[in-house]
Structure formats: C-alpha cells, structure tokens
Image (cartoon, rainbow, N blue to C red; front, side, top):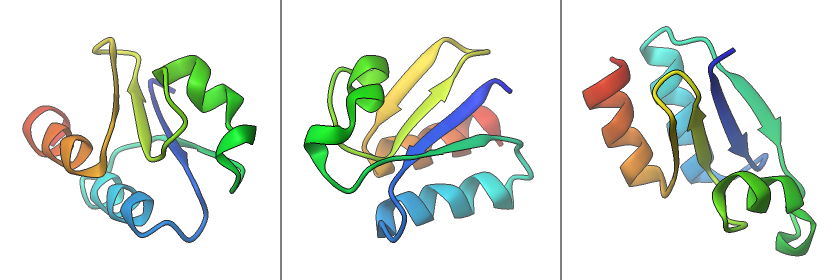
Length: 79
C-alpha cells in the first residue's frame, strides 16, 4: 500500500483526513499511534516530529503533517 496515515483514535484532525481519503475512494493503511507524544517513535522516525496526523505517500515520495496541508494535498494530488 502506498498511502499510510499515522493517526490517533479520537483525534478530530485525524478523522478529517480519514474522511477525505475515504470520500475519494483511496486505499490506505492506518497506523494507530500512542496517546503519549513520548511514545510516538515511529511517527518521529518517518516525519521528524511526533504530532499526528502524518500522511506518507510512497508513490509520490511525500511525507507530510498538519491536517490542513494533508487535506489540500489529497484534494490537489490524490483526488
């Protein structure tokens, strides 16, 4: 799978990204992260920081955070 979303259960910004990906009919994998920032080592490894959501699009070589940026990327590139 070329799209991976790092998300936290109950995070409203993560839910917006999930909704946008689903509305576009895109297949993606969700990696659920720990609630504690200090435990988000995998998120830090892939994005350089520990906040979620983080979208990784291997096909386009893109890793990004910030839900507004991700939503714009989905709309402009993946839709």
